[in-house]
Length: 619
Ligand SMILES: Nc1ncnc2c1ncn2[C@@H]1O[C@H](COP(=O)(O)OP(=O)(O)OP(=O)(O)O)[C@@H](O)[C@H]1O
Ligand SMILES: [Mg+2]
Image 1: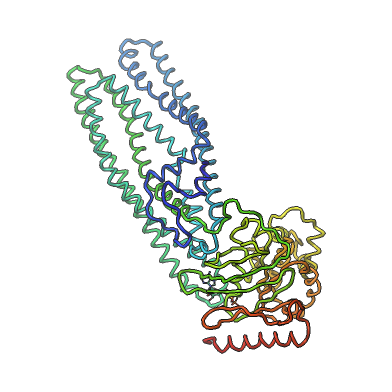
Image 2: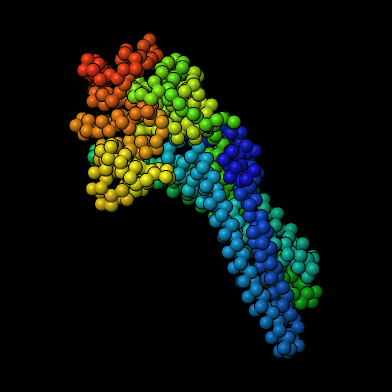
């Protein structure tokens, strides 16, 4: 299994897959599971990693003979006044430094390249995983929380990625090779110094768990802050309209202080952990200069050997402290790996079942049979809803605010799944057909129009290829938006600002209608697609819409009397005996409700609904 598959399939080895009804805070995964998960991403780059590790080892080994050459200078060249030997030894030192620098650069370049690739792979598969999450996941987890994981946590994996983990190899190679040389020079002194190392490991183990927990808490606070900032930026229209800047600022300041306090906690613990390296420094200083100095006085060791020894110890000191620093970084990175693993452990229940076939639409009839559905663990919205929407015709759905009209549309393309019962399109259960084919056959215009921060053209096509400019313009003309588009500064290539704030509500609605029609889906679901239009503007493109709707199954949800003129049938959702039921208003099956009386009747119904909604409203 490739790492991306492993990731998208969820970290089965680490934590059992959880349903989306869970939030993203999973029970703790083990450090081993976290390391194994990141390790999976190293696999495609094994050869490059091997090369980088070799270069790392070579870089540290090249520095190894330098203290011995210094010893040669002190003990042989200088006492013997041998200028030639002195020059040779200095030359040797220079060559080793140059070779070390070259190999170090090659090593860094390879490691940064692999790190870049691994980061891309992780971000890509995390993004793909999130894309597969159903709407329920996004209702339960705020965008700010998800964004923190995608951006901050992946960025925080640093110590587990090659640029830093190869540094750990370098430190280990240096430390062990230096120890080997020291053992050869003076085994007794070496063993005495090595005996001080476990003290450091012990101190560090204490800090590791604390830093892991402090890092987790920091990330939670950062998540909260991102969520708050994101909401504040998006809600600036509301904040400014109501002049509630101070009120919102107090929330933001509190979150900033909490995040900074959590950050300080990590820094303080890391500083203590780093400072504990002094235990080693004190221990080897006492042993080296106390015991070693005594040996030189006793003539048991030459001064050159002691200086070489001291230089080697200096070489170990850096790597050992680097290993300690890596330990701190690793605790921090493991906290991020844990959070990413818990996000990936959430799997989507809405997916194609193995061996499912593509949806084939012929008649285009949509049937709800005994459908039960609820958004969460609360009271079901529908408990036995039955409704048949005739194929290749336009059905309107009316009903009081909050009765469940939008939810009904969501169930058709499986934006949510039914709890029991079935929804079929031409007798094919939507849960049994290939999900991608279901979604390409059913186009939705949502009640809340969403536009991407890109050009008008890209917003209309949404990546669909093979659509000619002529067809694009024709559709836009027929939904009455072409003239507005050509009046924009760059016509179809005008950038739409974030969520279309540079367009009016009615323009956004017509753009999203054109988008659905361009998709050429045989089933089109329109949720209040005319709510932002005045009735004159709306009626102007009714004729065109009728011809565009011909041969398709169209479901319209509306509170507008004039939009009802487009419908062949009208269904009402209402609550009877505590349950939502659907009833057909036009009794004349198959006949378009164009007669004045029928329109009148349906219009009256909308008026009644409006009156009863007003009466129930607390204001
Ligand atoms: N994501 C959600 N999570 C939980 N409850 C929800 C969610 N979306 C809608 N609801 C609830 O489900 C019920 C039906 O909502 P729905 O949006 O389907 O109503 P509607 O008939 O389309 O109303 P309107 O005419 O105002 O658009 C409402 O009571 C609403 O509070
Ligand atoms: Mg609605």
